[in-house]
Image (cartoon, rainbow over all chains, first blue to last red; front, side, top):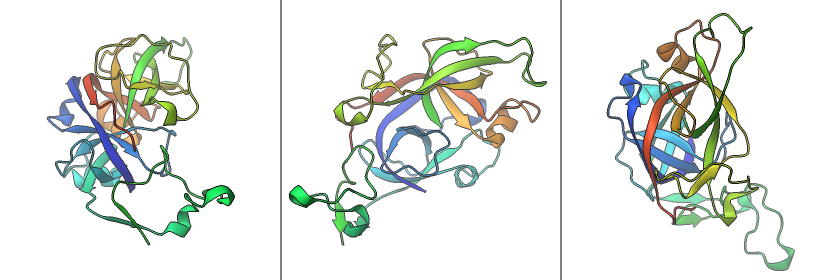
Amino acid sequence: MILGRVVGTLWSTRKDARLGSSKLLLVRPYFYYNPTHETELVVAVDTVHAGVGDDVVLCLGAPARWSLGSVNLPVDAAVLGVVDRCQLQRTAFGTRRGGAGAAAQPLGFIGGDPPAGVEWI
Amino acid sequence: MLLARVVGSVWGTRQAPGLEGYRLLVVRPLRMSGADAGPGSVEDVEPVADGTEHLRPDDGVLVVVDHLGAGPGELVLVAHGSRCRDLTLGESVPTKEVTVAIVDRADVSAGARI
């Protein structure tokens, strides 16, 4: 699954009929997760009434279709949850505010900043 | 799924059985614009008032099979995988990328950054 921020919404009239009235969200991942194409934005079907600005968890592939209740949907990404709280281990991300001698980040965030309201442990 | 702008088409006389009759579109996935957006690409697509003013084309391109009739300049939603292919085009089409929607409008806030 991928942690990302909802940054937009899409509307479409001409589309595959099985997409129906699904709400489509534009999500910017914080990390890449086995991308088929390294892209900065993912479009996912909303199942949890997420809105722009929310941090969400989404998944790709067949599990995304399972979450929508049918495998007969031409969909490969779905938002499965809205993140209320997020704890991250600081050492896994290197030192961001370490001053002049700061170590390079072993694992960075796409866009540079961590999720809003992150609690470092 | 990817949000992408159609920038062209490709044709082939000799192609794999199953691809005949389908249009192959060249698309560029969109990414966030702005200073934090990483290595840049030249803005070579005219801005369109469809809500993507804050996005810009990615450096890479992708060729997708189209069955909706999308044309150059339009925004499309591209789904990946054999399951999406089976459901839209059929099992005999040798592709993993297929257009599933033509996007009318995208609402992306200017301040949308992480």
